[in-house]
Amino acid sequence: FGPFKPHVLNGLSKIDALPLQMVCPSHGPVLRESFRRRMEQYRAWSAPAPAAAKKTVAVVYCSAYGYTAQLAKAAAAALEGDYDVRLLDAVTEEVSACAAALMDADAVLVGACTINRDVPGRMWQVLSSVDAYAMAGKPAGTFGSYGWTGEGPALLRDRLCGLKLRLIGEPKKVCFRPTDEDLSAMAAYAREVAGAIK
Image 1 (cartoon, one colour):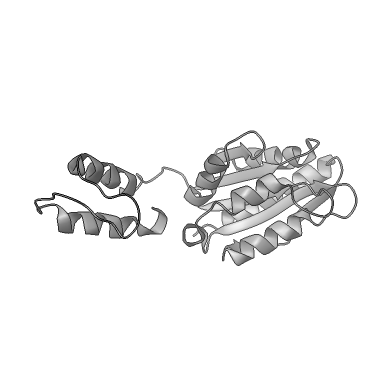
Image 2 (cartoon, rainbow, N blue to C red):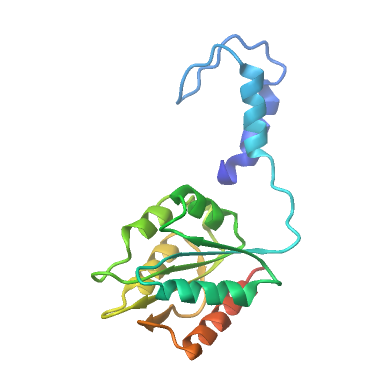
């Protein structure tokens, strides 16, 4: 329920004492039974998450030849220990899992390669699955490897700007295989983005 969790809990408290016979929502199925069980499910889904011991950074990426994956892993390694890092490969993970990691994180790093002057469709699926309200204001950065034109990281940046994230620095992009210097720069960039968490 994203940012609407308090409203769900408030609504449930208003109907707790009612002798329900039928629930007719403005959208969704009409309910004729199991009201209390469903209300408890909604309470569980809307309960605030327990406070984490460390701030969370999600690193979600899509890599064609493994080079963007190298950048993502360098970012994650640079943050481990100081942050709870969630590293997800959007090609192998479920879209919903990637979107949830981005929405739950305190800061995000999103990476993709460039193929035919665009970001692979899987990453667009992930970014179209996030709740803009849950993402707004988070520190964010983009990165990726490319072979010819390298539009991927800038396109990701534009999408994250549209979702109202707070973009830190310029996108990090690397032509083909990252060098040791590229990986060090990626690590520094990841620390810069994570350091912007309030």
